[in-house]
Structure formats: C-alpha cells, structure tokens
Image (cartoon, rainbow, N blue to C red; front, side, top):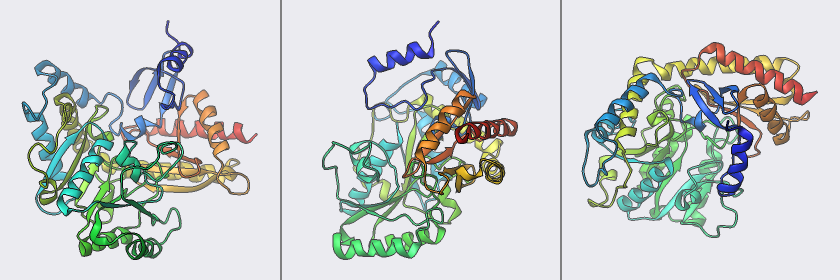
Amino acid sequence: MTTNAALHAQYGEAVARGIKVLHPVYLARAENAEVWDTDGRRYIDFVGGIGVLNTGHRHPKVMRAVAEQLERYTHSCFNALPHAPYLKVAEQLNRRCPVAGEARTMLTNSGAEAMENALKLARAHTGRTGVIAFDGGFHGRTLATLALTAKVAPYKKGLGPLPGPVFHAPYASRDNGVAADVSLAAIERLFRVEVDPADVAALVIEPVQGEGGFLVADADFLKALRALCDAHGIVLVADEIQSGFGRAGRLFAIEHSGVAPDIVVMGKSLAGGFPLAALTGRAEVMDALAPGGLGGTYAGNPVACAAALAVFDAMDAEQLPARAAELGVLIERHVERLKAGPCGRAIGRLNGVGGMRAFEIVDDDGRPSSARLQALLAAARERGLLLMAAGEHGNIVRLLPPLTIPFEQLAEGFAVVEAALTEVLA
C-alpha cells in the first residue's frame, strides 16, 4: 500500500525544490468538503484547492457534465477547430461579469495566463506600457504577473529585474487601516515623481486580496480608482481569481462597490476543479489585438468548459453567492466565540467579506505570530482539519471551505481549531 510517508519521500526526489508542499498528506479521494489521504485518514478541507473548490470536491453537476463531454471529445485547440462549449462559457461570462457595455471573453488555462493577456490587451488598447498594482497583492508567478505581485520572498528572490514598468501603491482597506486618501495620494505622487499617467496602460487590483490576507478594498477607494482611470485613459483590471464565483457573497467581489472594471480576470473556481481561467472585458479593449494575437493550445479545453457550465448551473440553482454570505456570518460567530474564550489571546482581527474570511494569529502582546500559526496548522492537521496561512507576516488563517460545506462540518472544523489552539497555547 502506498503511504503518505512513501509518497513524500518520492516528492523529495522527483519534484523541483521550488514547489513547496503545505500539508505532507497525499490525497486518495474527496467528496464536497471532506478528503481522505492515502493512509485512510479523513480531513475537513478548509483549503479548497486555494479557492478552486467553491462548489466542493466532485460536485454532482460538474461530474455529470464532464462525463458527458468525455463521451463526445476531449480536446480541440479552439484557434484551429472551434467548439461550442467555449462559446457557451464566453456567453455566460459576457452576461454575468460586471463590465460596462458590450463584453468579450478569452479563455485561458490559469489565472496567471489570464492576467498576462489582460496586460497585453491593456497595452494594445492604450499604446502604453506602465502598470500600477498594490502592496499586498498577488497576481501570479509568471514573469509579468510576478512583477505585479507585491512580495519578494519567496517569489522574486534571485530573479533580477522583472518585466515592467510596474509601480506599487498602498492598498486602502478597513482591514489594514490604510485610508483611501493615503493610497490616492501615493498614486498622485507616482504621477509627479515616477511615471506620467499618459504612460500607464493599466491599474490592477484585487477587490479582496487573497495572499494578502483577505483584505477588502474600501468601496469609496474603488470608486475613486474608477474615476482616476477614466480621467487618464487607464484600463482598470479587477483580479477576481480568488474572490470570484460566489466566494465573497456576490458572483464577483467588486459588485459590492458598484464599480464596473474594464477587464475582469478570473480562474480558480470557474470550472469546479478543472483547469480553466478567463478574462472578460469591454469589447473595445478585448478587441485591441488582431486575429491571431490571442490564443493557446489548451485554452478553453472542452472538458473544462463543460465543467464551467455546470458550475454556473450550480451557482444559480443552489444560490451559492447567498450561501457564501450566510457562511460568512457563521464563520464570524465561530471566531467571535473563540475570541471570547481561553484561546482569545491568540486571535486578532477578522478580515474579509461573505464566505471569504480570515483571522489573525497573534502573540500574547498582540503582535503577528507566524510561529503560532504554523503550530496551529500542524496541530489542526493531526486532528483532521486542513488550514492554510496568508498575509504579509504569515500569521493569517484564510478560510476557503467549499460554499457547499454542511454547516455541521463547519462547526466541526472550528471545534478542531479550538482544540488545536488550546494545545498550541498550553
């Protein structure tokens, strides 16, 4: 029988060192919010593929749609021989994404690839090259997206100069205490000191930061960015790769602000666990490149497209954005109960919106404690709960259970958090 230990030894010999494993338990099977490892142990999954499994592991609608598509055909490069599932997904996204006016869509394999193409289109549309991104943001590990990502270690160390020019400004959120006027003043300073706004092609922002710790951008700040982009002819790009598809209590997190971006970049939960991402935007921006300027061999794979269409069906039939809002209320209650108890001294601020929630782990003086968080991750795993970290200081527990998780399993998971924290603090 293959064991976790044997597989992890194989990982050390076969896989590049830069690919880090968070939990050294190897998946054997999964169902909704539960997974079982190769040793037969059961876990509640609060990681959710890092935001990929909003509809849970093996959602019945997704599994049926994929099985039916597998019987028809598994692949066709859309650029060479197009297929209807791509068109159907594009039509759904054009209708559902909060962009103003007529929309167009491109499908890709990953969120990073979608962001790369958003940058290409912004450059082509504006004839400019500069990009503004924000502190705490994460937009991918490819070279161009890595220039946007605002974290050196471990992502940028040893790589030298990255594609640019890219400029960073503070991210305004009630969760980090940065006021909108502070961030806007920093952008105005960029325009005075670093870059002419006439040279800026795009401004890229996560409405809710993922890697940054589930910080929520202030609505007034997003509205001010929309006005700033309009004033200077800059393309506003919303990165909804982690916050999209119901996670934040709306289909897309930016809908809470009422702001319509020029491009929405998405991925992760778009296809219920199958590799598919997309960018949807205003037609005049999306059509900026000539035929042949966009594409990819596997982009818009028909099996992944079939899965995505089933995800849209599940989102509607099960009202998953509304359920995310309900999930967020329950998470808040669980965290507040923990804060009021013996473990409260280790719990700091609660971040996020809807079902996209996270909480800080702090030391007895209220300072960020990545050591306590790492101990919590290990203790929780031993008790059958999978968690993961986020945030600038690596001290934030981000919660990404499926939106379909039974509420009793959510409560079971938080009981494990309490027991694990009790052990860590003993």
